[in-house]
Image 1 (cartoon, one colour):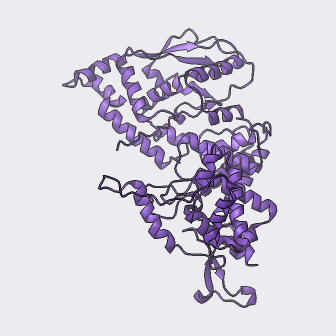
Image 2: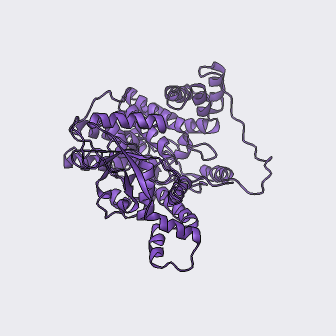
Image 3: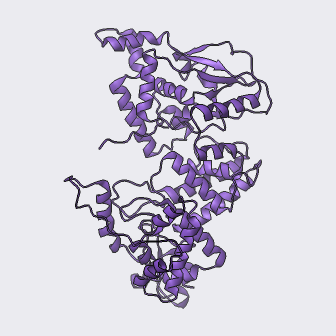
Length: 521
């Protein structure tokens, strides 16, 4: 099996900047420059420090290592490279209207920074994800094997001994090679219009990314960006007061940890997994934006308008943190939903449909004050949804995970209601299927892997085997009987302290935080 090439994060290499005052005219100086040389992209040049992306530019993380390597190779071989389009502001910044990935790829090669170098570490305050480090290591190896580093070419000019002729030819070309430039004429509105027109025609911006670009000053847009990078990276909230900036970054980091950590590793070898497993960058930002909108009852992205002070952004983030804590944390309000049972298949694959459905269910339980009813039947509820996972079928029948979220929530409520009516857990799904309230559902059949011709276990089979054997041994809450997450639980006094209970081992029991602090009382 060929390993999928990772997408490389080059977002730090060209910083973002606002166009400043709308309507400002661009600078005439520099527009007659037809080309920039390779040395202009070195960190200490006179050009590179003033290179910027518009603040509404999507993240520069769409190219895989192979594509970056091939582009650099084409550049070194003197192949035709499309021009980069720039606009120069009155503040003398060079804004990239088109060609951000091309420029960033060359900058990465020249400065040996593929998302994990000095520039990136400063940009992300040293917080580089393992996935980002892995992608950087992958492309660095690829570059070394196929092209050679920029430093290799620099040293070659001083020591031209016996080297590969192709390598030497490329080194000689570097002195004459450059990036062809085109310039946008006009004011900032013209530059912004050019950006959207060019990007939609040449390399269409993804639907979620476009939504974020158009809602870039709204509180939900800013909140989603902050959570995506755990409060690091480009500060879309930099216009707010320092106190608000600090608060946004802290909340975003906490929410990111609650939803996406610990890092999911494949195959699964532990039950300590995140609520939401590994996703591509576009998938992740979509999940985050929808989460922010769902939690805060936002139906249209720009529903709240702009947020000039950051007050509303902080409010939305607080609401997101509260719900994430409710789902799975050590906070007293936490139901401690076991991620494997609620958010993964039996083979360890993340289920976004279940995540959206559970978020919607939590909002419903909060609104109706129905938590105590859920706790009463929680043990059997978990048995039912794990034995017969109907969520994928419901999602399929309703178009996608987002559209299906209310149906998934209704399905969960139907299971709860059946159990409250004392229907035997083994008959709950039979009754729901017979009623056809969710379409024609079918009980799942156990996957049969006996037909495989390979003698090696797939990652999916390894994960399924681990979950099959490890999950039944998970500790259970002594109050509700539901499964306890690996790290997140509460130590409860069997005999209350108020009734004279002591802090002895005999008087201690493991529970969900909510069962201990609220339901028990």
